[in-house]
Amino acid sequence: MTVLIAGGGPTGLTLAIELARRDIAVRVIDKADEFFQGSRGDGLQPRTLEVFEDLGVLDQVLAQGIPMPTLKILIGGQPVGERRMGEVVDPTPDRPYPNAHMLGQSRTEAILRDRLSGFGVSVELSTALVSFSQDDDRVVAELSTGETLAVDYLVGADGGESVVRKQLGIAFEGTTDDSIRMLLGDVSAEGLDHDYGYWFAGPDNPMEGIVLTPLSGGDQFQFGAPLGDRDLEPSLETLQGLVDKYAGEGVAKLRDLTWSTVWRPNIRLAERFRVGRVFIAGDAAHVHPPTGGQGLNTGVQDAYNLGWKLADGREEVLATYETERRTNAARVLGISEDLMQKHIDGDECALDRGDDTRQLDISYRSLDATGPLTTGDRAPDAPPDRCRRQQAPPLRSLPRPARDPAPLHPRNDDRPPARRDNHPRDPAWYLHLPRGVLLLPRERWR
Ligand SMILES: Cc1cc2nc3c(=O)[nH]c(=O)nc-3n(C[C@H](O)[C@H](O)[C@H](O)COP(=O)(O)OP(=O)(O)OC[C@H]3O[C@@H](n4cnc5c(N)ncnc54)[C@H](O)[C@@H]3O)c2cc1C
Image (cartoon, rainbow, N blue to C red; front, side):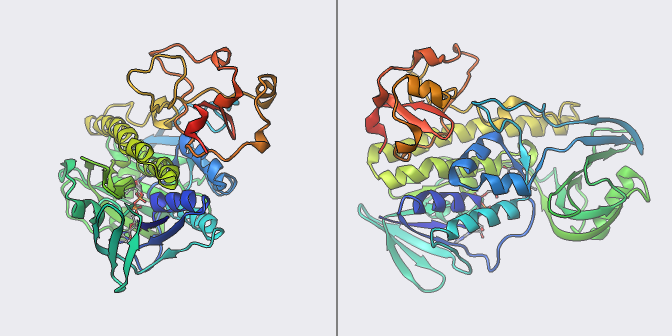
């Protein structure tokens, strides 16, 4: 089997690792001439950390990143308190990484690229997907290098402007709001303590301000500042002016602006995630406001869901990708949109992040499923000694899961918590994961 992935961002890289480690021939092409530099999606959610653990990159991600920082709130130049964007939760066996971890997107991508190179695959830069056609048996892709390539499957992980989505004629429903614009980027700030994040606002409107969050691996912060309807250049001078306005003159001297962009809310969901042998994933399929810190995470998990299914290749398995991931993307977009509305409304809870942003409550259980645990649930972890008591085979002798463990579900408010006592006793039902037991009939996994 051969798979072509258009786009070497976090989604394409995750998918490529998933395929390469299953010995599927994969190529990753990217139209960019060099790798993206910038912190963009710097909030990695617990569910993504679990995926990264399975991909073999978690140690590096944890070592290179930092925990979610405390935000110092300064209104009119006066400190009024400190706040965390989410409650810090202690790890448990079934939630070993319960808190979001901060790592600039370019560094996450570099870690993923490094892992991918271990399988002998690298991202082919300056290589755009130009067009493609498909029939029942294959996809034929035309690349900007002049190469024509026939593959079994094509995946568009080519971002919000996805050529793949557009050529498939898939509607990208949602809204773009030009009235709200923000200046975003990475900058160093002399005068600020890099162990903290900052919220600076004026006394007249404490909910309109500039946020700076520390980035690991240097002295930079990621900033977000409101631009309103002003037509300002995303430059160091513009940003210094905004910091002076909200924090007060002389509070922070900015330098080393290495990435900046003007952002406006673009919240969209593709009508379909697949046409025939062509799939879309990540921002190509859904774009989020950065408020929820969900975009990169959702793309990584799309890829994690799709990878093993492509490797499996059976139609009934492939068919579940769109159902599971589009439903999830719609839900996640709702969370990000609610948070963005709180920002717009000046709600004082706008900086708070609830349990839903951790993405550990995602479930793919079917609507007619009634059991305490069914396929698609996230199960509480069963410690290995417990597994042994239930005569399951030892962890190390088990085959690699074909199914992503991410759809396990520890708790859901609308049903009783799953109890380990409810697990079937037949070891044929056990699929052991790095941390946990997913209940699946044995025929669902290789
Ligand atoms: C300021 C900001 C903050 C954010 N914060 C967060 C956060 O905290 N948490 C979070 O989860 N997300 C966040 N996001 C969102 C996150 O950055 C995106 O969701 C993520 O980059 C999507 O990854 P992707 O791989 O799907 O697409 P992209 O990262 O957009 O990658 C697509 C790739 O495809 C390539 N490409 C495009 N067209 C072609 C073509 N025709 N042929 C070949 N290659 C092509 C592009 O060059 C690019 O490299 C934030 C975004 C912004 C702007």
